Image (tube, rainbow, N blue to C red):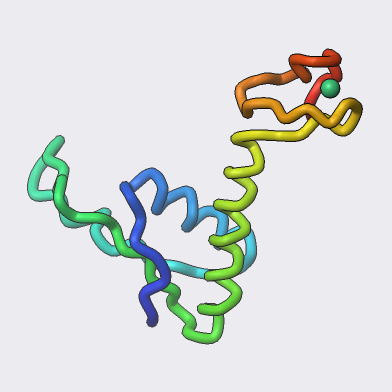
Length: 101
Ligand SMILES: [Zn+2]
């Protein structure tokens, strides 16, 4: 097993774990079972994502990079019709009204 990624929180770790599982890469999140009691969160601990099969490491790293890249693309987009750049929260181009997928 090799350390793949240190997540910001459990939600991010779980999202990445699910994403990698979709690509048939099994991972293990270290830290998700370490809470001391009910409702008690280990605030200082960032979950570590481990890849179980070392041979999956490079592919898993690439998938994570692509995953974050896709998230970044949602943050801002360029209208294919008029070329204006739009903030991610706009579902249509502010300039020409073209709907964004
Ligand atoms: Zn436009």
